[in-house]
Image 1 (cartoon, one colour):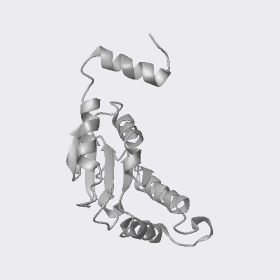
Image 2: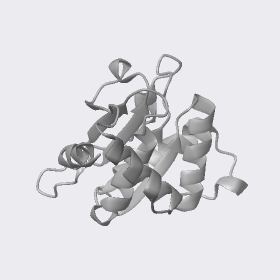
Image 3: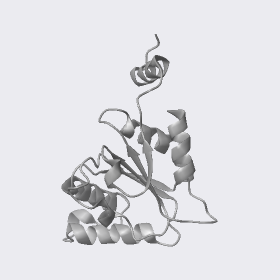
Length: 170
């Protein structure tokens, strides 16, 4: 999936001279490798980001829980001892991501497979900088640059992935 990884990098890597919010949608059939592609990108290009956050976007409730966890992890506020509701926490996280000096972050909204259930843009930070990846089975319902993950071209590519994932040769 080298060509897809290079295309993601072209679309998302931060540019200090021209910061802007970049949104990339990785779309394709279930089980085709969208999440693995996002993981590989995050690992390979982590040095370009100050922070990378994985958010479960399977449903609005799981996304809110992920954002609450993010707030706690970066110590924006003590979520466990706080009475803020989900919307207030999302606002605090958005403010933190929007800070002027906090520009090189990557948010990965994973498994947003039913975009008709809720508007994911509601959970984007107010920032005019940063990078967002959304993995979904329905890319046509979202706004942003789109990469459609296709089946692997050859059996050799499939075998290389199997070797890597299983940590076994032959």
